[in-house]
Image 1 (cartoon, rainbow, N blue to C red):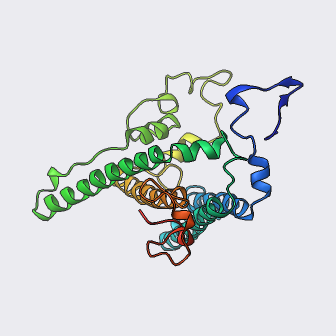
Image 2: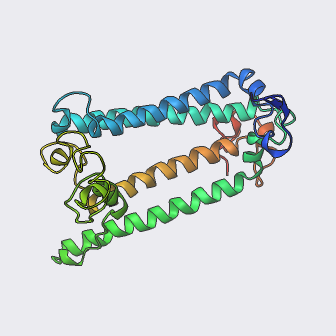
Image 3: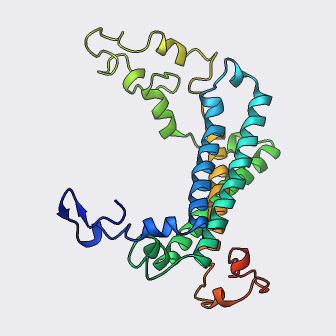
Length: 273
């Protein structure tokens, strides 16, 4: 399919068929490309396991054991982090050793490399935005609490996440959306007028004795943005290292230098500029 010139007997022309031309052969001819993709997939899965271990616990009462839960989450996120670093490292090695510009002319790999500066600069401003705003809020709140005026904290409610929980039946936030509104069509749907959902769902989600949709507030909002800051800065470093491994505007011939080149050239992921 990746190299197909026809689709169901009809010729496929123009930009719609270009993105994956040559990818099939590139993938099969580079072990580093394969390893990079496979590590990336495994890293994402491992990170999702960490997240869902407590939101959808595989064992009864596991989510109530907070020490075990914190240890399992940290354990899996650490592993995911190491695996993702490996994915980008092998991607960088692929770009230095195995990437063939002619074979990949005009496809997705070529397009990414052509506007890598835009990708890197966008990641850069997102990281700066997250860093200044998240850490700025933390510093402000810590200072006003330390001075004995906790009412001056800037506390932002995660309204979009709360809306999702409300629409699934959590009434605590008072949003009256979908399942949390007794008069909405989601609640009064035919044929049983309110009894069409899983038995006991609305009772369970509002009980507070289980891990279904934990109540979220400003603390969660800050923590999630702090985690996002870490993820985006890490991604910025890894993406820039990989995309600039062959060369950059500051040093176009980086790929021609040896492994021991002082600015950590292609041998260590191209972290020069």
